[in-house]
Image (cartoon, rainbow, N blue to C red; front, side):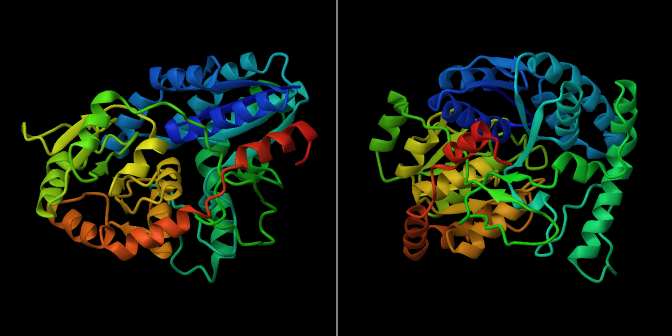
Amino acid sequence: MRILLSTYGSRGDVQPLAALAVALQAIGAEAVVCAPPDAEFASLLVRAGFNLVPAFSSVRDWVSKAIADPSTVDLPKRAAEICAAQYEAIDAAAEGCDVILAAGLFPSTAAARAVAEKRGMRYVYATFCPLWLPSTHHQPHSYRGYPLAEDAPDNRALWVDNSVTMQTIFGVGINAHRVSIGLEPVENVRDHVFTSHPWLASDPVLSPWAPTELCNVTQTGAWLLPDDRPLPDDVEAFLDAGPPPVYVGFGSMPMSGAKHAARDAIDALRTQGRRALLLQGWADLAAIDDRDDCFVIGEVNQQALFRRVAAVVHHGGAGTTTAAARAGAPQLVVPQIGDQPYWARRVAELGIGVAHDGPIPTAESLSAGLATVLAPETRERATAIGATIHSGGAMIAAAMLVAGIH
């Protein structure tokens, strides 16, 4: 069996598909991964044993521009462009495949659904956070320019409104493309793309799914990519040179609204008498002086690193949140966009860290959060929760794909 795994998004969208590809290979299936052709994603997949099949364009430049000035992004227009361009890329990647599993940005998953329909292939939709799926237990995400109705009687009504909003934002472009390739337009693009039985690839302790008649969800657990890489020698040397440092990294977030994030984080940590380990990332975090209590790193094995730090300060991506939780590391989450406020809230609710108030940190706000994060009771709670994190989600999903379970 040959299975196409398709996404368009950041590392948090690509790495779980790499994990699923490894699991599929382990049970004798062939996996093809179509993802943005950014160099870091290609390297990630090569380490996992796969060659990246390129999506229509790099994602980093688009994300940077969209976050820097959201007002310049015409969402319906951009969604239509992504859907059409991704259709071509996914269709080429789907040659010889039996199944498509799609995750990531909605226009990309809509394109994958269209490819599956044209080719008569089985299609599975997956997401990494319950926030995106209809439920009476939580509100939908609000899109810029389309606020949630303040007078809605309940979450059910808000999700009805959400289907209308998504039809307004995405429907015209997606349906225009569908018609252009000989498919019928759809009246509810959200439910058409999500299907009646979406998969939720997140840990049930970190993000439990409560049953609801609005959506028949299968939660597999998070798709975690095994990583046995040793830490670089210079990172090992820094770790060994003093007490455990605090990791600060914002992954695929440019942090354009927090231009002094590195300075503020270092100042806050020095106030607490702590050393700093900065991930350069898309925010280009850098040291502010030549003192030896701060060290800047590139991409490393988080699974190995997070077990050796005092805490993790990050943006709240699903992957980083799960990796830190699994390592038993207390977290200070500074959410920026999308599902990141959800993960920040879950960290706080579980007692394994703190949700920063707003997306722009200061030395004072970080210092206040760190006072709680670095307390012994937070470490104890984080250690206890870490022992409960399920690591077999990718194998569960792989077996379901091969068995044809939906």
